[in-house]
Amino acid sequence: MQYKYYLKCLKGMLSDKRLRHSLKVSNTAVRLAELYGADCEKAALAGLLHDCARDLPNDELLTLARHNRVPVDSIDEARPVLLHASVGALLAKRQFSVQDEAVLQAIALHTLGDETMTLLDKIVFVADKVEPDRSFPGVGELREIARRNLDRALLCCFDAAIMLSVRNGDLIHPRAVRARNGIRLKMG
Figure 1 (cartoon, rainbow, N blue to C red):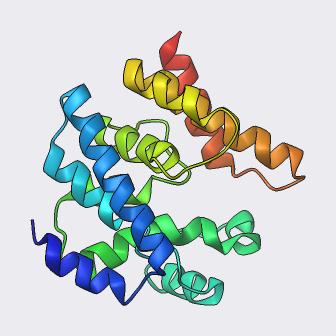
Figure 2: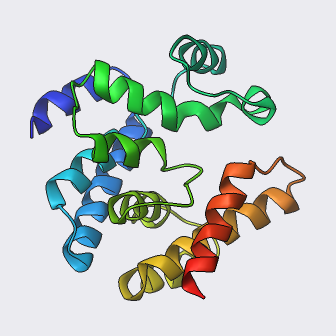
């Protein structure tokens, strides 16, 4: 992996805080990959690049999504930041020359998830929520759950995000609801 090259590029794209977060997500994803038997190099790369589009302005996220045939619905229109995952996968492919579809998919799904998430998708999604600098009520317990049961941690991540949106009176993307319900149904 061309880690130094990716870091150099990301320094020009992300704030220092977001870059630190990306490095910690990468490291956390590697630890989870080791624990659950996933490809560590793919986890590291997807974790590092997962937020490469996060600091783009909303209008640019919308424009890039539309010009690249990324589906944009009314909730994406109202909350363009939700598009940073899909747009990030596009940037990872174009600007960073990532060709691995599994890595690109993990980047694309790290925000809203999907009903058919792979092991790598789940690892990057959870790593984004439990990296060491994350600080929110229950994050310590969530980290413990992530070390014991990745699907349970994934479900807890969805539940927490949806409940936070409800408490804040915010929109809830139907993709996140479908992803959450898909995980729950698989768990029995």
